[in-house]
Structures are given as structure tokens and as C-alpha cells.
Length: 514
Image (tube, rainbow, N blue to C red; front, side):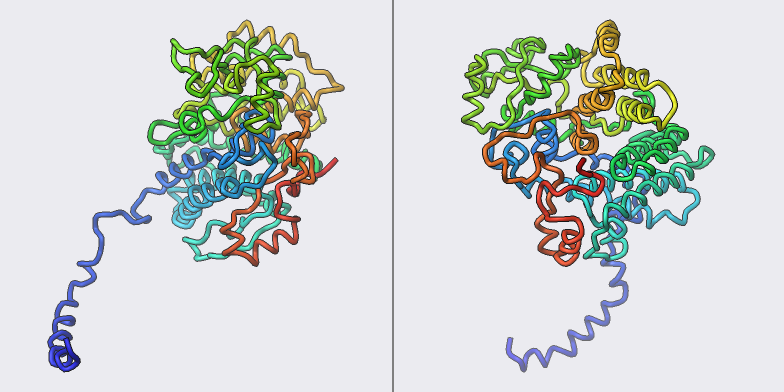
């Protein structure tokens, strides 16, 4: 069409455009798909709860650093096994939590902060958000906190990074205010997937996080640590397994650890030698609940699942994979131990404790009792440290039943184990935190954080050749996502200038060397 023709028809085209303008907005309004404002915010909270479930990076890093589960394989699995920085993995908690948790909680808070009828939902959201930020800052150190996750609600596209020393006091304040503001006479959010809107359980959850956060400060600020621990203890924490903060999984919302270990990496991850050895030396009945060994397995296909398979839970058969091996040296280590191959090392049982629908225990009565046992041994709370210690052990052993009927620890074995493990004042801190290590099995971020805080268990550093890739003996944090370094460069660099180099062994604020 030439210019003359266009000019000839232009008046007609303009007439049609203006004639059709009436009703144009209505025609272009989607009346089928819901907008954020149409969705009940309790369902957004449920989405955030589900997205708290840990990604694959906890296998690559956390569980390897604390020497509970390890792999000799490289490629996408490179991480704690070789003390190497793999930013495809280290970005996962950042991405999942900011996009899948904080984005939702920020939006909920912006929508209902002035709605008195949804006050309980507001406080529940604040508690979950505080928990997410605690995991984020424990994992990375300085992070976008005060403006983090506000890209949708306030168009903060390049948030500044806040010092962890400023983040922790605000997290504890948020938890305190939210727990206090929960109102038993207010609206019950029955659609809440976590606690069904039960205010008492949400309050115990918040106070348990205050206890956890307080103990996190035990080296860097013991005075505040003691105050926060006493506050949580007096206010009431999770003390029974029925109140545990647990993320439930099903075939739609799968446990990522279970999904990975029942799919592409089924034959690539093994229980680490130090963890298996500790449980064996302690004659711990939980080893039978957790582990499986595929006898005479010479290859991945040689690990035959099911009732007619070659898997056994017999604790005397289990041998953990030594730390610090690649594929070739793992084979050599297996041969030296009389195994057919490294496929015969013990694994977390993927038919019981790491299925795709396995629940994920985030905050538990067992962990709380062990933290209180340490607090009591420090003189921060009243009560018998030994009784709290034994209660923590019992609760975790009883928690095993939530995985599978075949993981149940018989009562007589619980009684016998407790009787044979009195708490010794001279070694109390190590005993308590060794048990916290066990009680936090499969909760990689919490076990990793408490290992850095307490210094226990007393593990030997990963001896893999090239261990000098890190300056410290152990990895101390995750590195920042490459996308942040590229897009939010100025704010990332400010955090690095304040905190230290963006490397795996830079310590976070509360992780004071002693």
C-alpha cells in the first residue's frame, strides 16, 4: 500500500477507532483469571509455607559440610564434597525463598496490614517471613532484608543489603510482636495449611524461633542471647511433637531431597562416614531407622529396592562413605573396606526417610529441648540440663515414627539409650550439640547453622585434595547469586566491603571464631 492510499483511508480508520472506543476497556478486561487481590491471602500464605521446603542445594552443601550425606561425584553435584563454589547451587535458597516465600509474605502484609479482621493472618505471615529471613541471613550473611522482596509491592528493584547485626534484632522483634499480637478471640484461619489457624501453635512456633535466634547469638552477644532465650522459655515454645513446624509433602508438592534421591541422583549420595560411625559408636537405634545398605551392590542397578531387594537396615552392616573422595578414590576406599563398590556404602533410606512425600521437619520439640539443655547448662534457664537433654533425645527418637512404620524406635530401646548416656558436666556442650546434629538430620540449614555456632560435632575437615580452595577448615556460608552480582552490583559490593569477600569461608556476623 503506497502513501497516497494510506492518506485516502486515514479518515475512515480514525473514525472506526474512535467509534470502537466505547466499551474497549471492558473488552480488554480479563474476568476469568484471578488477580492477586482476588486470591484469599491465606492461600498465598500456604504457598509460602510449601515453598519453605528446602531445594537441592542442601544436599550439595549443608549436608555435606556437616558430614551427614556426601557424594563423590562432580559436575552439577560439585560443592561441599570438594570445597568448591558452585553458584548454580548456592543461588537456590536465595531464589526459592525470595521468589517463593518472601514475595508472597510481603504481598500479604501490604494487603491486610490495615484489616483488623485478618490480624491473626497478618501475625502468622510475619512469623513465617521472619523464619525465611533467618534462614536466608544464616545462609548468606548480609542480605536485602528491610527492603528485600519488595519489588512487587513497592517497586524496590535494587534493594540495599543490610548487615546481619541489624537484621537479627529486627527478626527477633518481629517474632516478639507477632506472637504477642496473636489473638485467640480473633478470626480463625482454618484454611492455614500449617496449623489450621491454631493460635497457640503459631505462638509456640514464633517463640521457638526466638529461642533458636537467641542461641544463635551465644558467641557474638551472650547477654542478648540469654535474654532472648529466657523470653522464649517463659512465653512457651514447642515442647511436643504434635506442635512441630512440619512441611507436609504429597505427589503435587514433593520433598525435593526425596525427589532428587529417588530420581537422577538415586545412586550418587551416601551417608557420610563420621555420621554413621557416631551412631554406631553410640549404639544409637536411630541408625536402623535412617539407613539402608544394598548388600553386594556392584553398581547403581545393583541397588534393588522393595521387599525382595538387597537392602538391609541392620546397623552392623552399615559403613559410611569416607569424606574427601571423588568417583575414583571412593572406589578405592570401598575396596579397602572390603566392599564390592562404593554403591555398597550406607544411604539414607529412600523408601522410608527420603521419599518424595517425606515430611520436612523445620522446628521441632527435640531441637528445642536440646537448645534448652544447653541454656540450662549455661545457667540461662531453670531446670535440669540432663532432663532436658534426655527429653530432646526421646522426642527425636519418637519423631522417627512420622517417617515410616519401619522407622519406629521401640520404647525399650529409647529407655536403654537414655540410661546409657548421662549428661556429663565436663562435656555437656559437646554431648548436647552432637545430639542436635542427629536431631537435625535432613534439616541441612539448621544443622549447618548450629555447627558453626557451637563448634560441634568435632569434625575433621574435608581432606579432599585442593582443600586450600578455602582458607578456613570448613565452608562457613553460601556465596551470592551471580544474578545479584550482575544486576544489583553496587549493593552487593557494599555488602562485601562490610562483611568480607564473597567466598565460601567468610564468616557471618554471629559466627565468631573462638
